[in-house]
Image (cartoon, rainbow, N blue to C red; front, side, top):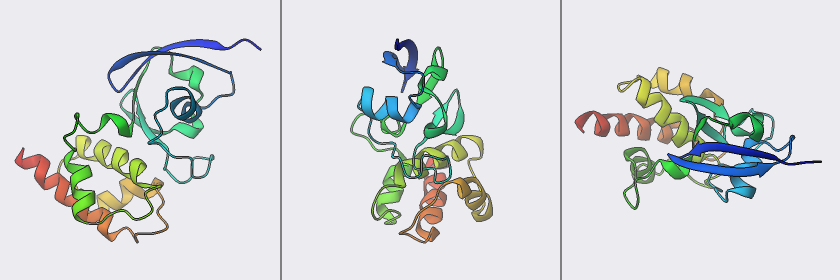
Length: 158
């Protein structure tokens, strides 16, 4: 079977790759582009560990085919920090110990960033609602919510 040639933008960079029809975006990111931050937790869109932004929309990359991203914009956890400077969300996750095993952390950070770009001052309830598609087996969520709230404050201060 012939592979598909895909041209897209990943984390602001023009990117080309070859993929099979059945390859998911997660497969392409991890195996072809070596962007291993997004994790496969469930392969069914239930856990959010593979969350990325696709044309400004939060999606589970395990549910998107690699062929579908032609001409589109993909933003992953690797694009959140600017060089060596952590994004305030990443910094606050560290400060508040909002991670343990780390499997879910990239998805939570991508989803939290999407939330704060739309709502710079969310309530606890809004944060929990927005992050409901991301599952964590380790932290109990309270530290994650606190980290997101603290990052929102830091981002508003500028």
